[in-house]
Length: 429
Image (cartoon, rainbow, N blue to C red; front, side):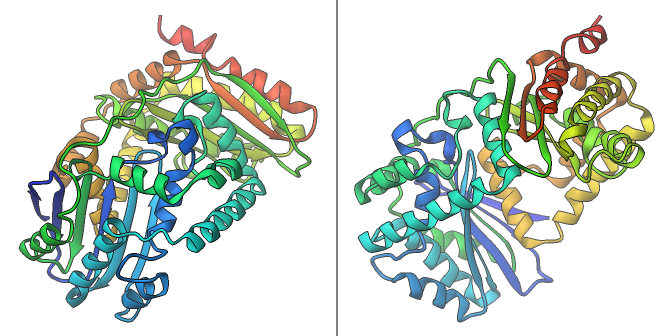
């Protein structure tokens, strides 16, 4: 990869990956701010600010923003997560300066027109309602609350109707000026781009952002675990389980990811084979690991008939404990191959490259070369994977949430709460 990186006097980082065979470019602005940066009275403001970015500036109204990009065949979008907010575009080679102009305009010169603000609040209230009608959204919302109680990390990114109603233009402007600072922002571009030209454009168009870093968010503290049963009249029982994972900088990160993949990362994983293929207890079951700056979250999700929930969770606990002790060379090799293939396939997309570069800079302060990433995956062994699994099972008590109807849910969560008590402890001695 022909990756080049420059840091402007404001502390803003510009990183590009030129892909000469392409005629299009993906580019965007990634800011190191998200839901975890919000105070209680700011719950949901990161997401609202992302929405309002497209609702007009001092130079363009909301319609002109999208029409200018779509008139050249491009597209514009944004997204908010726990630790980052991204604003990005995909355009033809000749339209990179236009995309940078629009992206800088929506962040440097937002108008926050009162009518647009009230309208967008209503849109997000509808989004909250839609999420509440989606069981797998609801169950994860409860799981996050249980994993990170009384913390920004444990709150929904959408906010509430009450908090949204309280947000004013001044609150949005203050949040923007407080958290969108040069040292905490990355402009990343990949595809048909010229690094020097992108740097020159960014230096001019993003000059107004302050050079002092934004305040650091509250340190995340994984909770004491426990369980929650949420009763709803549903056809399925939705079951989730979480344990404290590891942060982005932890040396065991890749080993833990391999364990996660062997356990529930695909159709060949132990959980899929045992729970779905052999027993027919579910349609979908998967595990994941989300690393953050100072913590991590290992999670599992499945849906099943409420009557099967106790058997399902008992099997899940047995499979997790057995996997931590008996992972084979073949399973680890398969998971590593899947990880490397996923990494390399993503690099064929300029959008994925731009996003990966930005996230690396925000997380590690530098881009990680493909060879380095592959080497980290190759270094994972059966021994390191088992060690990472055993560390996972000893680090915290599980947080368990069941959503649905039927009397079997209480029994199911009781089985899950026992995950780290008996067999897991035996693994450590």
